[in-house]
Amino acid sequence: KNSRKRRVVAITSEGERRFDCVVMLLNYAFFDNYSITRLTELNIDIIKDFLRDYGMCRLKGDNDRTRRSKNTVEDCINCVLDFCENLAESEKNISFKKKDLYKEIRTYSKARRRYVTKKVPTFEVNYVEAPERHIFRDMSEGVFQILMNNIYENHKDILILAALSAFAGLRPSEACNVRREDSPLGAGIRFDTIGTEIANIYIDLSREVNIRSDLKSVGGIKKPRSQKVYPAFIEAFYDCYRTYMDYCEGKPYEAEYGALTNNSNGKAMTYASYREKFQKAVKECIPKLLASGEEDLIIYGHILMEHNVSPHILRHWFSVKITLYGATAADLMYWRGDKSPESA
Image (spheres, rainbow, N blue to C red):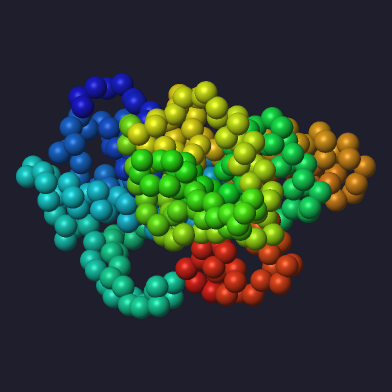
């Protein structure tokens, strides 16, 4: 802890934002702007300066294009305040107290539809508003076919993850949580058959469990539930499932956990790893889109040359597709696992 050498810790992934903010604070205090040598030297002025520089995009590595939205800044403030509060309670030699960090106010939350207690820092934190970004999440049937065919043929390690979003509406992080049919932790996927026909396919998302021996989180489950594959997609999903399980034959995996998708080392694949692999598969589709001769595919190919898309695009395709099949807002809530009608 007294080392003067900077350590870069790669721990950022979905669900790990709290750690990322704390690591930035510590790098700021130990290396970038101050030269403290032990954690007990952290003081209220350093905390204030960090949050102000974070909000105004003045951290080491920030540039003229760096922008952080109000929500991003507020999330970081909450993470840092929580960390510092715990520090103040556990370290006798820390110079600040809980009352120096924040005050609590009652405010109405539209999302939760009730009054909640909110922590407000005792000092002002400004931010540079990020410009509105257009999220590229729509894609035509032609784009979807090209992308899924590429994943089916060349990226079978993420095939079932893509199928879980495209045909069952799962969030990508939820797909990473799915276990095998024979998992010792409970069947993560279950098939109901009538004769030789598959009537329903159920995905168990009722609880988050550890599915890696190193305890690393693979991603979160936003709404615990049992989710069915949409009836119109059962055949397509089952084809992907069989192809994927054939691909997995003989490959290492941690049998005591039974994760459905695994990396080359046999551990459950994380959302961060999935996202990276997915974006690689998307980029490989660009030449085919540009050479398609179809205007909408060519335009989309140009869009992909300038912008990244995430695996969430498959969940959006699923949402649009079942809406075209006649799904209502209530239906969307069920099939997507939404918590509110607004999301649907």
